[in-house]
Length: 305
Ligand SMILES: Cc1cc2nc3c(=O)[nH]c(=O)nc-3n(C[C@H](O)[C@H](O)[C@H](O)COP(=O)(O)OP(=O)(O)OC[C@H]3O[C@@H](n4cnc5c(N)ncnc54)[C@H](O)[C@@H]3O)c2cc1C
Image 1: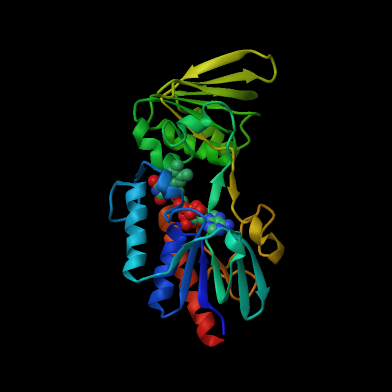
Image 2 (image 1 turned 30 degrees about the horizontal axis):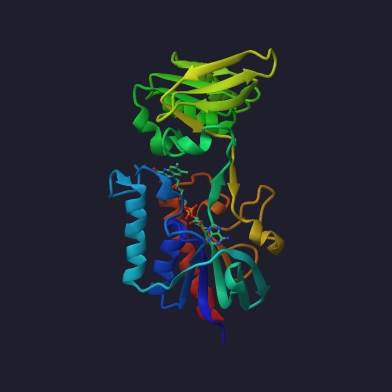
């Protein structure tokens, strides 16, 4: 007899939604997170595009989501999961703290991503307060202001096209030339308020109380420059938080969990949900949707065992 029917790893929007659906499907559920429930939205000033709630502070939305799980008495524990042992119809979830481990019939991995960072001076200080990793989310704050986008790949260029229509000036600073889709690059270059600095090393972010600029150096000529700005968006890639399941054979070459349209991985009883799975749009609403689908599928799987 397993300790739980379903263990949900990660209590972000995907995990919390999964816990609600799994509990309502009469499953014995445990939800684990290494941090406070909420995931990435805790560090976001405003969530702008979650249907029906308008603009809401990220921490407030996280609290509302967690309260919803607690109305259903979902057990939650602070644990860092280090591995999943897959013994067929029983899985063992191993945790760092006190060497705890729990058995269950199905697991939903909803551990999200972390934005890749530059790890340079000023980045930590201005994180979520001048430096953002999500233009769809935070772009509107910079209407008629000066913004720098760091990166030159598809995400950087696509998000820059969105930002260029809102902001006063947009400066792209990138390590190489733009590497995005040529059509997207052409579209971006049509904006009169866009300046591009290719082949640059970002040195540091400037400012005391408030972010004031980005300091960089040409890798071709060695010339240094500081561009003044009110906000910075970094698009130098995302890293899925999936290292602890790498031995299960469920990840693609970029480290994302490969799932089908029912959020099932290629291992029976192991599901993925939210930002850590292969998908095109990583937002709260899609994370919640994934969580709901994964929980329903996990419940069917457990009921059929
Ligand atoms: C700055 C910023 C602004 C954003 N703004 C918006 C917005 O306005 N609107 C919008 O829709 N989206 C926004 N997003 C995107 C949104 O935050 C994500 O799409 C959403 O949080 C994904 O939810 P998730 O549950 O999949 O993952 P996450 O929110 O990343 O949650 C994953 C959880 O798993 C936990 N975890 C990870 N590893 C382990 C482990 N080994 N053991 C236990 N727990 C673990 C983490 O602590 C975390 O709590 C924004 C993102 C950022 C970074």
